Length: 406
Image (cartoon, rainbow, N blue to C red; front, side, top):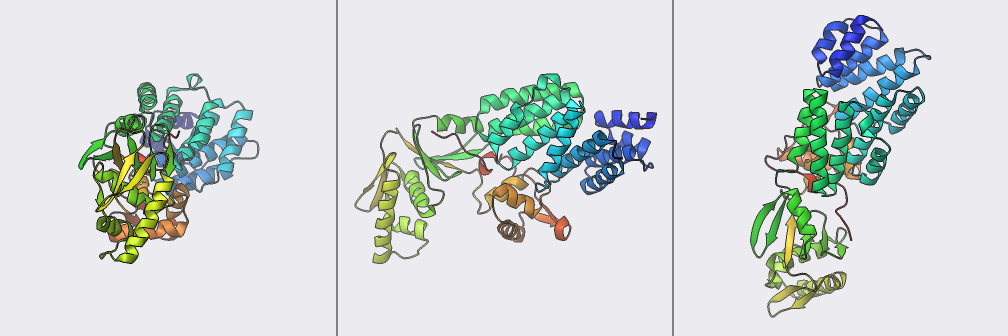
């Protein structure tokens, strides 16, 4: 490796892509192509970066398997940054195995961290945690230790384990300062914002207030009966009942919870659950049927009693009833939650992250675009969508991933 390549690599490691480009911008040999690709990725030119890294991987000869594997890892990182979640994960696994076989433990670990971050992004928390558990961060450079702690913090945040998340972010901040890479320090700071901005709204006894993530964690461990509008479940400290596939029952449960300890008139219940403007005998009969179903679904948590004017919720063990609502109520809130990270997403990547079809994701994006809440650039398969974050709100509770269960 010549001196210019060495100097460019050191500049990239220090987070100075322009300094690296000054040394290799006019060169077309494989190492220079790879370094140019990484530099372009650090500058945000992700499409150009992927093309350069792909050229570099092809240009390395059959005896340069390690160099080719490093290019694959760099391309995978660029794909993750551009939210190309459909990038073939098996190629990253093969590259990681090659690096491990040739003793490049640092880049092999980086490949595993990339895989864990992708799994975290699409809500597969257990798999991400298993992947992370196979590595010992103390043996790696500060930048990789920061990456390890960022993934660990992300998993803890999505599971509402705020104490664990704070400790991981403190370690990540220390490692990022030791690494001396401004972009990494900024990433840690952005991750820390999720713990210090409102994450949900609490509705109880006709009043409403915002909650931080640690407040949500404390609420879930309290003795209250919680109607969770973030995950569409009803739960107390011992039992959880999902109503995610029974939207009418969930609407009824939420309306009753918002009115607790009072009752709710039949007319209001019909209007909210069935979206009917007028209440006739057929709607009253349907309401009685749905209330019977709700009573059966919540039998371990609460009763549903009839009153002169409507119905009321009666908790069995809990001391009170509250509603945990999203910070921003929106039909396509989950789509906005992903776009709120400030990165550009394709509709196929959103579909993969949401666990929905690409057509469903596209319809949601089109609806949000008409409302002026998202914007796109590019055409065809290169089309990307993005939006600025919702000011003052974290979107953790909108993203996939289970809340703590029984």
